[in-house]
Length: 217
Image 1 (cartoon, rainbow, N blue to C red):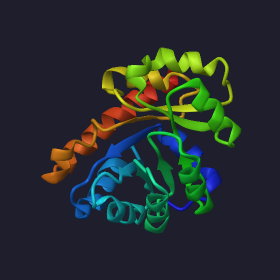
Image 2 (cartoon, rainbow, N blue to C red; image 1 turned 60 degrees about the vertical axis):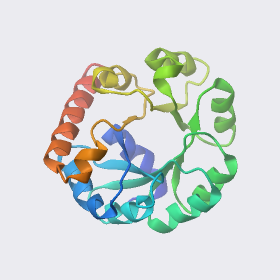
Image 3 (cartoon, rainbow, N blue to C red; image 1 turned 45 degrees about the vertical axis):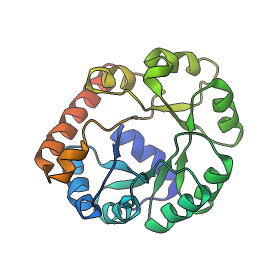
Image 4 (tube, rainbow, N blue to C red; image 1 turned 90 degrees about the vertical axis):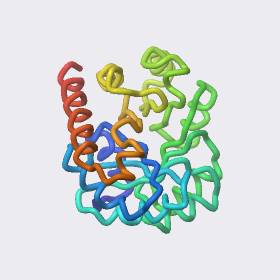
């Protein structure tokens, strides 16, 4: 998916769901990206938790109509590697300005992780208007996002951690939720055995919930 950096948040918002992918075999990345796209979820963050993460980003980035990002970016060295792999966006579990700055310098859209109002305010002061709230369910779920929205009305949130089909719609009904993030639609064992039909079906169910939630706004 070809887009300038300024367009990436809009594309993420259109998709509304950011699958969190942990891959053990980068050779599965292309088929996984196609399955997600065909199910109506045309993006994913490929975490750097395994050695296959960077190669998976590169493979998925080559799939037409798919937005490939890097997840669990923890260090400046990983930021450089994610840029080199072709990540169009990057998600971090916490907020490290040095990591965020390096990614932005490489033309990558950054969604830094936050958990507290102090972190949200710091990210806002550094020019971010989209942040990941992690771990969302442990912090209070959708009600916690409502509380953050009050003092930060111009900030958009990506809840991650504990997001599941039974609460996905509740998150996405809120206009200040950019997207919701989770891994249930990309189970590691299904990827390993090449069961991409199951993944496409799970993505389609996510897309159905997304569309219903938007209609209810």
